[in-house]
Length: 136
Image (cartoon, rainbow, N blue to C red):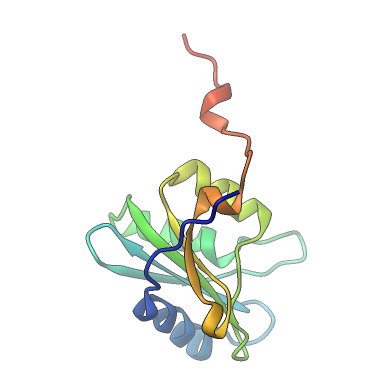
């Protein structure tokens, strides 16, 4: 697997970190996410933790972006509360993000190892949902 690294969007990380610091209160909201739309807007959201598996912050930000008319996302990042820093997307989020935005870039890593990689690099040899749909 070859990781393609792009410029790290520090403004996007700070937007997610700000939301994590100011909006993640208690056990129901422990992660924040920020996504940059193709038009340059930054959309933010928090997770909705629930013992049944509530949505991750990355998935909530996808819905929030659509609600604001931003259907094309360029880059996404998630940040944990309590100054945990950048947190990579879980497997479910990786699959959903890949299916919805196959060209999406994701910020991962910590400290001086922060990097921006393709969602495809985070989910190699993935199942591609669209490839398995019946065509009539």
